[in-house]
Length: 184
Image (cartoon, rainbow, N blue to C red; front, side):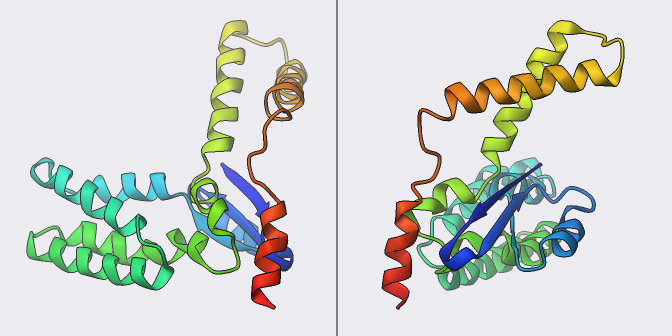
């Protein structure tokens, strides 16, 4: 699952859950795009390596990392958390945090407006669409062929984007112009 958005001066950002092959495909098809690992999926990956005794602490520590205002402070806080994880004998979680924090904080780069950060740090929008598609296809159950399944899915996507998503903005693109003015 991924979400592609456009940032300052055409800088593209692909947000995804780090599924197999996604990062390589993005670098091949969109060489100018940056990759943003979904913050929620990343936190789940780290927490899966934490013992139940430390889950609450680790979750709060990770939330503190992503509450930072700048990328530099988030990376510094992540290193603090990783060090403390090692002290608590959570070496695998610390390793996972250190390996993935760089691509999980791409949204904090100055190329992207502060107002967009909450939306571009996860792939919630595409996840919501996937849930809607699953809900509709489960009602049908079995399809006679792939073409009929594809027709239902595309009809649902057209309906959702035409009715529900067209009435509200996911990202206010007028902020990009403000960010460009500040950069110059």
